[in-house]
Image (cartoon, rainbow, N blue to C red; front, side, top):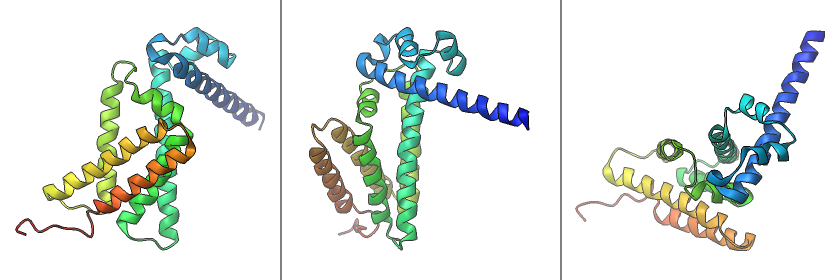
Length: 207
């Protein structure tokens, strides 16, 4: 039992150290960008040591990537839980489910606007852009599955446009001056999603 208690304490301490470093990195990267950020500033703000940072993350680049992964996970979890709740409430229209998930995603973009602005600046470590593009393709596939999009070029293109609309809306939300302005962007995105509805609108190419 003592060993289990000790193990739980060690896990808790490790989790807290990681959390503190990520918060410090969020602040330092936000203030200086990736290239100009200094590891010593991160560990000082976290109340830790350089050795501890390298132990938990491996270096500045890995710390940046971990911060991005945490942000992506938070966004994805918010969207997924919102869609799951909507389904429990009886919503089964694919476009309405997409809108529900998008609202959660865009609300998160406002709540974590400092991170969205950081990651959209293009100032990241080598390999970051590739990782972001890979995640973008995964997001596209998820949206296609949610909408039940077919294999026709018009279906694929419409889903790609919808996904781009949501991504660009997140950028606009994050750079909004006020929450009211951010909400207006979110509502505009919803209007565009409904106009581009790939489920109920299937144009006849011969028309």
